[in-house]
Length: 141
Image (cartoon, rainbow, N blue to C red; front, side):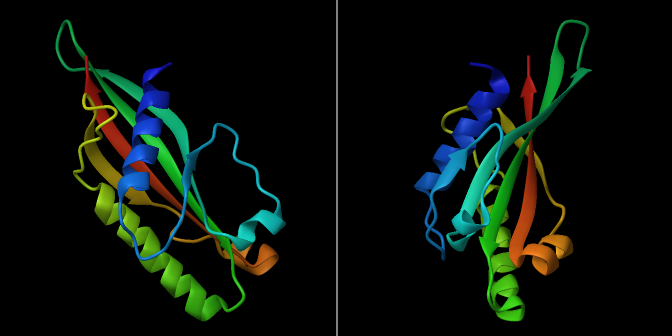
């Protein structure tokens, strides 16, 4: 198994071990595609995104590994539910910030980005909240 899959799996394990305001079951998928019917339940999907390799010395490299966490749910009341779901996404980001990954202790948290905070197109076209957290972990090897 490759490094990026191990880190994604470690993120799933950390999320599964946490206590949050909303109940969910995180899953790692390589090709996440959902039917609208599946969106009635909160979906938290961890997806390997990219690896950027740069030199750190003559003999070692830095690997910046990006992992996306997609948060999706069909909403009935946009104003109320989107605000609650945005708070949940912030809760996930705070939980993972600087948190060591037990399943990939060689990877250190570097940064978190939330783009988009939510997709306006998904809300209007599908009445589905979609938010993406991108976590970057640094591996030195």
